[in-house]
Image (cartoon, rainbow, N blue to C red; front, side):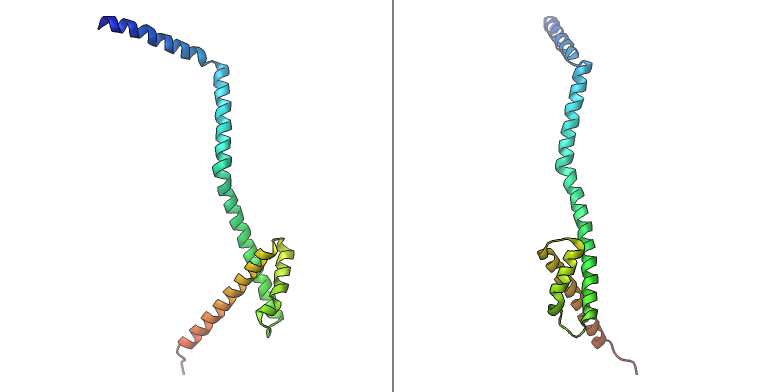
Length: 134
């Protein structure tokens, strides 16, 4: 038993002194730089896409508000016309204001018209269902 302890202790001491020799100031500085590069890669890979999603969501809400305003304007300008008559003009106006593509502007304009039609049909259904007071 004593013989084994005598053999292990010098080996362990040699390993630790070798590690101590490796861990100098320059080595620690290099490891810190490598660690910072690795953290930067992880941030770019995982954190930036989350921030981009938030930005895209804000831009989409902005475009929806503009589409609502534009479709309301054309609905008031052409009250007797069906929405399909002035939808192309509304799409062109949304593209002019926001700079999005034609397909995106078309989808946003159609969604705004659909929301308005749903709101109108809901209010009519509520008026029919509500009893009238004499």
